[in-house]
Image 1 (spheres, rainbow, N blue to C red):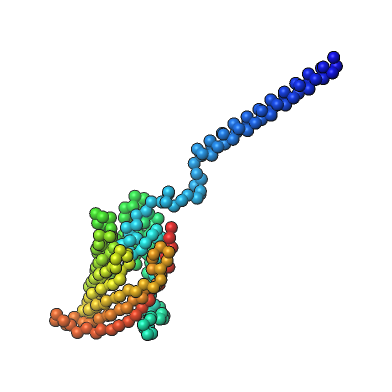
Image 2: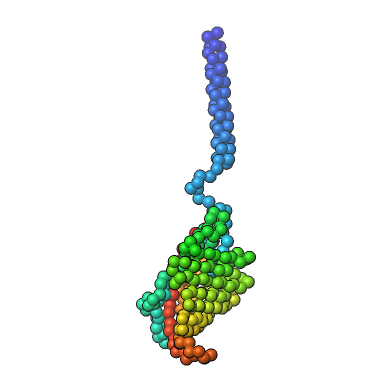
Length: 267
């Protein structure tokens, strides 16, 4: 009888252990399913890494208008004098009187600062609200391209000016007319193929009685991985004279060379 009781107790212990093991396994499976469900339904953290194309939607119109490709954040451009040695240009010192030019864009692609020192501030809906001063105004064409920027300050008429822009079907700038106090300059741009940067610039202008003309041929020598130029040569023919009341005033003609370089950062 004693051995039979021992056998019964051993069987009960084995069954109990088996049941406990099964329960533990079932609990682990349930816990895992609940954990997986929570991890799928939980929102991503604010600082989680998300592919750019899934979270950022931008319009490249302004970027294209100013001769750039891609999701540009800022471009910084500097001009140097150059000398012609043989058939090549050699870079020299910073061009006298030249200023560093900036192009800046919001993450949505809207321009906030252009190379003509125009400033653009927008509300959360992308509507222009302020420029270089409280007197600044900006107009866009039905296509959404900047048609006119005007800065007229009543306190200082010398600082008042306007920029009128024209574009081709691809949204590339073909003409800029800068009108200031007793001065007006017109720039016309020509492009090769479908490139967004110009191959030629023609300028004609007048400041008081002084007359100016120039023809610039651009030769591009270095690019980044986005297709934006990082260095280009300027082969310039310049004319300068004084208005004398005739249809063909005397103009002095000169040749000079420059090299422009720029650094570009992207979103």
